Image (cartoon, rainbow, N blue to C red; front, side, top):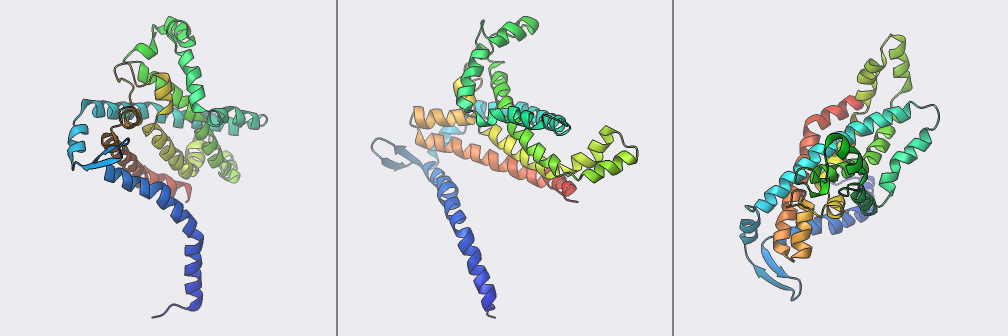
Length: 297
């Protein structure tokens, strides 16, 4: 059965409109992923451009290594520290700014500054703040709680980087939650207040369900950024001491750029990509659907 002429035109128009986006997606997303898959089974010399097929040798060499598993656990630990702080802090700050009658625009700008600033330059500043002995952190927290020499400690280096990451991601979370709060119908709060609901009950029964889509979107972006963290680790600690703050992205850089192990770095890249896709699908298929449904009911 032939399609009506109008339906064929609409179908063709759809391909014309989505064609440029599909082309860019293929060039900048699909093609690099396919290239990584190919490089995992080859030994490539970037100087001579020589390819040698090695099969699964790169996987056998990289996957069992202690270096990869330590970087993976560091990445997961960093994510476990930064994501709750970023989401919780972003939500609280957004609620406070949203409730202001004056100066809301000023505080939006203040908390968005970390997003607009260059993360590498800001990481340099944070490195000086954590500098052993004379840094602000050692001068304050070090004297109060005895937590000194963060960057030289195998137990404190990763939390130090997590502080920088949480600070950097807070601005984006605040902006996204503010966008979600602006979409909450005001009349629902008025009705709940007339029924005698307290501020907490209004938040839990009205605001929080309506923030479902914004929360899911913020969570996915925050987890993604945490899993692929690189800049602050590279600048603040360099992955040390003794690889205690080395993440998968830093390991990928070291193998691929520093040691020119293209096949090994491709295996690390594939591991990172698998974790990213797995966590994103897990979030969307579990509580993501429930939160989105609550926000669109």
